[in-house]
Figure 1 (tube, rainbow, N blue to C red):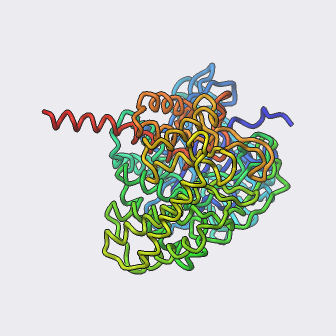
Figure 2 (tube, rainbow, N blue to C red):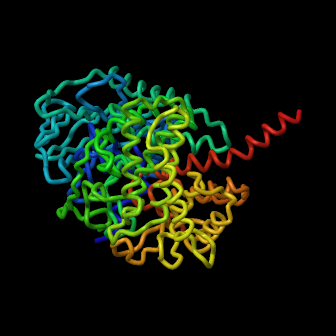
Figure 3 (cartoon, rainbow, N blue to C red):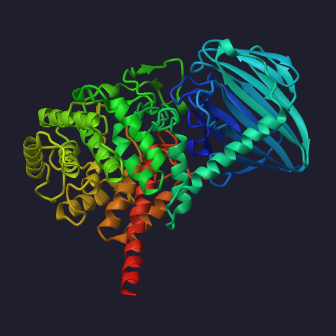
Length: 610
């Protein structure tokens, strides 16, 4: 199988309506699209199987060169095709609706001829249910078709006249002259509500303009004013784009099974919301001024995690679902032959000790930023403290969700420490009662064990797990960030130094050494957020120049429209893993804010002196 038919992951751009998402390539092809919810079954999935997955492409008929951009401060993409005979632009968006309960979702594509005279063609080949269903495409009027078969239905309306139609696909074409444009809308509906309604042109244009206006207004609320505003705003737009508006949840990525290694088995479904992201998410949203989104996310978090403290999961569906069974789709070849393609995620059933700390840290950040910890939530958090006391001495699968044997991971133990530490801080801040003595004793016992068994005797830095002979793990960069040790603590410094020299390639950080410990074959590239953690540690420990140099190299690996995947191959520049990745963009935001701190402190000092 040739790799050439699959574009690089970096060739894609995200479209979002804050319910669901699509990826459009530089060639004007929508190769991934789900409507209604991020984890829904796709209507186009060529990203995971070039022949079976389905796509919707609009492009000039003749050869072209491409440039593209997001319209400023939006999640609306504009692709510019330069041909020998002129220029056409393609504007793509998923319509953002502010009203609740609207049953259908719409993709709008607008083709405009800016110069010359250019033949434009479209190929529409929907495939439902991960390519299992070839739905019926029925042309019922000029430029109007309906698509049905299975649990989804679509209405295609196009001002590019439909020239050929097959049972499960159609093609359209039109020659556009300077000043001409053509509108195409694709509306998702429930099958029982499928009606071939023709939308007025003014309505489609109004929805496109309204979506642009929505994103522009949202971006104006960003309070970050540092030197990396463009990158920070784009990362904030990614987070908002990965938000499920009705619930407030933010999913980890828009895709499933994009590989961490081409041709390898490290292919996971990331269309769920991880508690490991919770404190980072809240911190980023609050630091950028997005308090409404932060409170919405916390409301989802409180509602979703309610119940038995011992049954806390590491991830949930965007609606709070807990049952996320993992299934391998053997009929799909996977991106560039990377199999298996998976939906669902078995890691949801793992025991990861760190999850308790992530929830409590999020609660503490929420409280610090004006949130209320009511009696019901306090009762639940107190029971989390009891679960930590009961389970902190157990081995676990760790923050990286290893599928090998459980271990006593240092990061997991430190997050158990953080859970009790934040619980005690909350109790003090609000005058709460609880098992304070036991929480304090447990917190101190965890610290004592980590400092005794989790520090390498030779280097003086923190190890990956107890008794592992000094192995490294990039998650230990977080120990200073969460406050277990100071940034200038010799152990933190030794950890950063070893990770920089032994777990990095040209400053780009791997999560850990893939030596079979995680129960999987193959390797992976450097992990974007780990590299941003290193930037933050360097910046906060006073190595600002080194931190800034690394940060600027990192952001140079964003694709042409500012997006990052989960991983970066620093040698080839290739983006790998699911895309775009919330974790990576959270790291970028936090690193940029950390780099801004010295400048703010200098400004404050100068103002105080004057």
